[in-house]
Amino acid sequence: MKLDLSIAGDIVASMQAEILAGEKAVTKAMKVAGSNLKSDWRAQVTRAGLGRRLANSIRSKTYPKSGESLKAAALVWSNAPQIIGAHDTGTLIRSKDGFWLAIPTPAAGKGARGKALTPDAWERRRGLRLRFVYRRRGPSLLVADGRLNSRGLGVASRSKTGRGRSTVPIFLLVPQVKLAKRLNLARDAKRAEAAIPGLILANWMEAKKPRSSITA
Image (cartoon, rainbow, N blue to C red; front, top):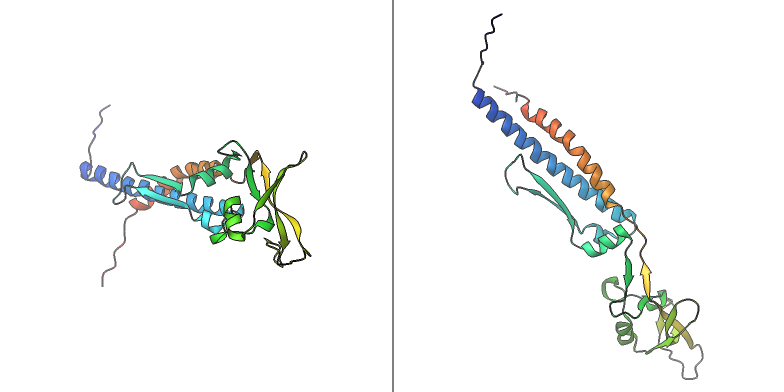
């Protein structure tokens, strides 16, 4: 039996075209995978009730920054990694100085831009001193001798006779607090990773399709 092998066309050009199609396919697939994962993580943060601002801390970028490559990669990250990580793992939080964590009650109110107040900041803001109240059962307290206003916030009492004055719990004091696990970022990351081969294949086939031309 005799075999005759011949090559039709320019093999070098064919290989080069295949490489270019592959570079386009991989780069586009990584852009789509990174963008989808960013959207999924942002949606998780929003559904967990952690706010749009924290959701928008999730960012993505594709490498190389320009051009196309068979080694293209996508990076998805958060600009608030400690906060995101704490809600993703259910972190146990302890006081830095080994004493108490001060958890504000609704009567404490909020500081600038809706941020929680520390005991020192609360005293400066309200012009009242906080008093420590030890409790054998349940968390101890930091209380203020004042009153609750119409918004339910602890403020100084204006009464000279003491009428309406009360002891208002402003902070709960606990040695540590366990954050509930409210995110599952690994689940979305695995789903995005599993979709990459299919994206590459689909984009590769699309890149190899002949482009039709329209002539007048």
